[in-house]
Amino acid sequence: MIEAGVKEKMTTARQRGEDLARRLPTGFHGEWLAGEPLSRHVSFRIGGPTDLLVFPRALEDLALLVRHLSAQEAPYFVLGEGTNLLVRDGGVRGVVLHLKHFSRLQIVRLAAEGMPARVLAGAGVSFPRLAQFAGRHGLTGLEFAIQIPGSVGGAVLMNAGIPGRELRDVLESATLVLPSGLVEVVPAGELGLGYRSSRLPARAIVAEVALTLSTGDPVEILRQMGAQKAHRVRTQPKGFPNAGSIYKNPPGDYAGRLIEAAGLKGRRAGGAVISDLHANFILNAGNATASDVLSLMALIEEEVERRFGVRLEREIKMVGEDQ
Ligand SMILES: Cc1cc2nc3c(=O)[nH]c(=O)nc-3n(C[C@H](O)[C@H](O)[C@H](O)COP(=O)(O)OP(=O)(O)OC[C@H]3O[C@@H](n4cnc5c(N)ncnc54)[C@H](O)[C@@H]3O)c2cc1C
Image (cartoon, rainbow, N blue to C red; front, side, top):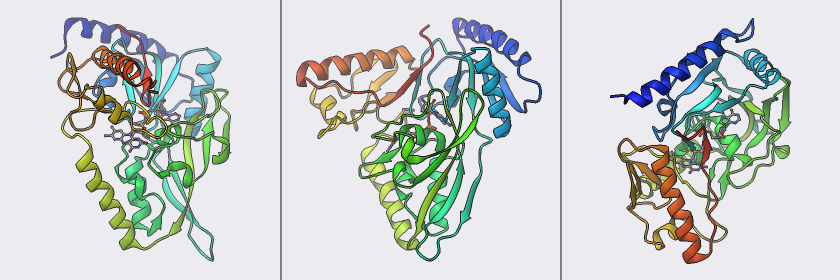
């Protein structure tokens, strides 16, 4: 059941969204939802509504819309699959862009004579789906991605990976849409990819990527993917919505180990709880709000610094306004 206050917020957001939708540029193709609760679109299942959630049809539509919004100085934000995101309870003003239609997945060059294969993937393709696609075609280099949720676009922004393997290793270039609406293909080396981080040009949107992958042994590829899955089942909590690791690992240590050593496993705030299995995960154990999660984060940050002198750096991104 939706509470009265939440319903009112959704109605106001819907009115603002419908107003924004009326002013979408002529020639724009895509769908939109006004006043859409973002909790429906993120893995945490937390967060208020956005005014307008827009699904551009194609690259031209995305470029047209971004140019239009930039010219009006209107705020916009790109949502991937929302697996690394805490949306605040007041929701996100302005336009949220969703690239579900950017779903191209194609081998454009087969591996031959020492040359790796070249694969194109739209920003809206799911990262595990990309890994599966590569594996099915006997291409190695993306086995690590099989258990990393999210979209290809989000994986670029986060340089998603596991210890020892990350997207940077196989990324050749990314097609970016700049705030001016200009579309540019940027080599991976110029994207500033680091540990769960990137330095894309300001407000750039990833529309597509090109990856270089080598031919591998299909049996070995499947074996590695199976090993990734088994490792996840052993080490990560299941059953409650979450956003993966909340903090980056500090150099030479693990955020989860520090949070556990600070005695914080199992601590609760409202509907949010620090996982008993992996202390770097906060779970939405039932109707948690963003402010519940934020208060656990404040506790973690304060206690870990007080006890161990370590300032944890947040891995999850935050967006939106408080109530
Ligand atoms: C259970 C679980 C396990 C996880 N395990 C891992 C792991 O092992 N390794 C790992 O690296 N991560 C892990 N994560 C975190 C998450 O999967 C990754 O960070 C993922 O790459 C985020 O992708 P997304 O599409 O969900 O991005 P979102 O959460 O939607 O967005 C994250 C950021 O990327 C930006 N963004 C999204 N799409 C685009 C785009 N097209 N252009 C520009 N910016 C964009 C958003 O604006 C936002 O700032 C895990 C998450 C969960 C829930």
